[in-house]
Length: 340
Image 1: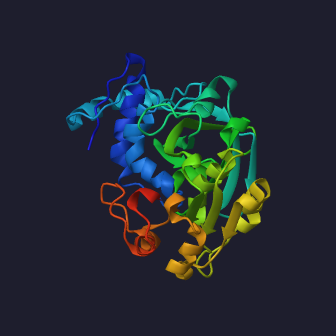
Image 2 (image 1 turned 45 degrees about the horizontal axis):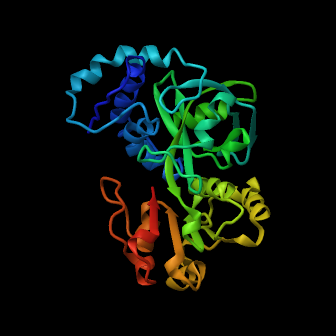
C-alpha cells in the first residue's frame, strides 16, 4: 500500500524517497537487522517515521496511482545526492563516525555524535502515534542508515541512551546486505548518511514492578537502549537473551554489552542466557515473578521462536492474539508486546 503525505513543499523530495523506498523494501533482504528494526522498516518507515515529527502531518488516505511515485523519482535522485547537515527523522544528513569497533567478523559497533541542535529529538521524543512522550515515559528509538549510491536504507537501533550525546549501533554484515557492507567499510572520521530518530515503542516504567525482555542476536539492541534509559526509580528487569544456535558466534559476550548493563543496573537486572529450547512455562514464571499483574513482557525474536512463546505477529504486523507459553502462564494480551 502507498501512503499519501500532506507536507510542506520543502519536504516533497523526502516524501518521494519514502514512497519509493516502501515499494522497494519488499524485495530487499532484511537479514542481519534487529527484529524490532525490521518491523519499523516495513511498516513504520513510510507512516510513523514522518508522523513522529509532529508538524509534518502524515495521514493515511486513498492510495496514489503508481505513476505518481514514478514521476517523483527525479526528486528522489536529487534528494539522495544532496544530503543535509541537520539531523532529522525525515531528511538524510551527513554525519561523521567518531569511532568504530570490530566485535566479530560480522558485527561492528559504530558511534555517531549527535549535533547539539538535534539533541531535543532524543530528550523530548515523539511516540509512534505522533504525540510527545510524557516525562515519565521512555521511548526506544532507531535510526536509518542510507547507501545513496544504490538508494536503499536500513534501520538500526542504538544500544545506548542517545541523550549522552552520541548514538552507538551494532551493525551486522550478512551476505547480500549492502548497507551492512558499506558501514563495515567505513572508518573513524568518515561520513555516513543517517536520518532519525524514529520511535520504535514506548513504555511507562512506573506502571510495572517487573519488565521482562526476551531476545536473540541483534534483537537485544532495543532492550539495551531501554535499560540505559530507565530512571533511578525503576522496576526490576529480567533480560532473557538466548544463546546462539550451535556453531554460531556468540558476539554479545565479546562485546561486553551485557556486562556493562549489569554493572549499570546492579541488583535491578537479572540476565539469563538459556538455549532456545529451554524457554518453558516454568522459566517464564520465574522471570515474571510473584506479581504477574504488574509485569510487562517485551519480545524480540524471529517468528519460529516467537510463535511458541506468545504467538506471532499478523501478516500486517499487528500484535495478533496472545497464545503459547505466555498465555499459559496467565498473562493478558496488554502485558505482552511483540517486536519483529
